Image 1 (spheres, rainbow, N blue to C red):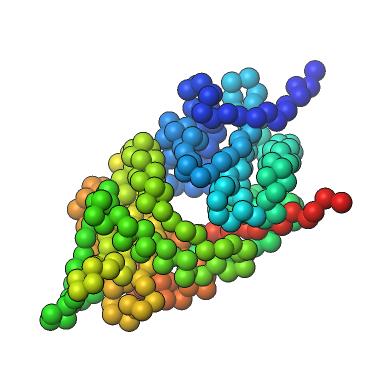
Image 2 (cartoon, rainbow, N blue to C red):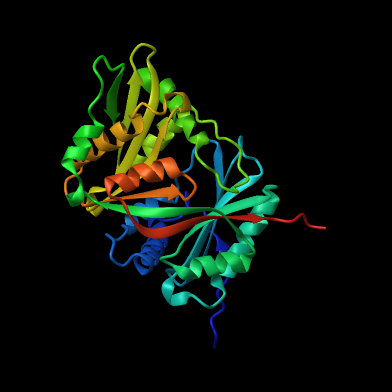
Length: 336
């Protein structure tokens, strides 16, 4: 007798710990398949992330299970106040269960929810380390909207003289650096204002409006990072005469996956560019992370292929191409 596998809703917040862990194990298995040389994901950490949403976000999750084992999982998330035409999807099928149409079944449910929520554009990402993902994206009819180069830096190859040079500031410099794991209350509004500089980063062909960041979002992000057991280091450059923060960079580290450090956003205000702030921040953060993140060996970062300025800084530091990541966009036609 052939076992019929069906899609079912998955309520992460009310699911048992065992069910969430089963999804975490699925996500970890998918990661190992794509990145076998990397420190593996921790299923328990992935299980925690299933419940993570900002207060203005909503989501719908679905699974296909075989007994207690999860074979496929998908999640559609969307914001209730901004980019009301957009939703973001994630979908994973266990490497041992691929080629059986499970991903298509889950994708249909995610599309149904997107239509219910009047979301006409769905975005999702794939990596060339998992060629099945790109093939599936094309099968769905999605278009590549923002290709990105994934680069890695071997920390043992850093040029100490170059780092010192990039951190040498002119006499009477009007800037100083801060580094935080949690943003102090007195800087919160300024950090929020600074983070929105990321709206100037290239969006490629993504149909996406600028995002408005709020103090509540930052506090919610910090709480989720802490709950996941990660460390986020944020370094900011303050313009002393005005108190304005003109640039920042951030990295993420998990002591259980110590060799790998993830570089997050780096941005400098357009009016403060050309002052060496980007190079200063990147060099200072690398030195700081080497001290605060014991065992780190590699730094991984994504750069949009069209972002020549940031890509140039990373290449000068020694970042080497490692993979390709593509943000895809699927437009849902109106139903007649």
